[in-house]
Image 1 (tube, rainbow over the protein chains, first blue to last red):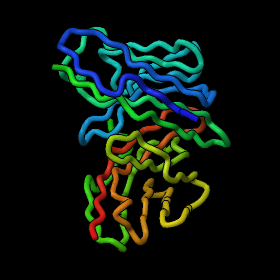
Image 2: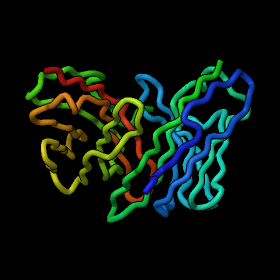
Image 3: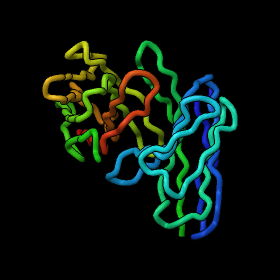
Length: 114
Length: 112
């Protein structure tokens, strides 16, 4: 029972390089999310997908794009990485049951942009 | 704007003591208030959650107290243990699958 799987776990990029962070969930959840976590800033929502085929911007979407490839997979792309995007990125999925929006998180991707 | 304000940023508690973390929210449409626990190198995991139709929810040593009129809620950890040392996040959302809004987190250290 894997839950939410993120790849890669670590990545170092040079400024201007591009990369895609992958996320997959095996819980048949409709909703998926991408957050970034920075010291003292908590978890900030980048993009989310309420269901397959839909995506919406969160609090900090600039510099990122997302693709909801299918119900299981939700990827985050950095087209031209900047040092300000150095962060830990978390993917999550959820299914609202009886009004409870329980989000399940992956283990994170630690990204450094030099 | 910060919709969920969490305090303190860090907290040191003696083993066996009570840890208290507070959160305040602004959006009256919020009706679901979870707390997440995060250990170093791991993703956050749901600890306990409350809906506004009750003022308190207890699960083992963890209790959420909720004050709807003040728009505040808090996490109490009774008999705190070194294994409770982690970062705790409060969050809030409105009904359904709307995204959670997180507080900035509290780093708890429980010392023996």
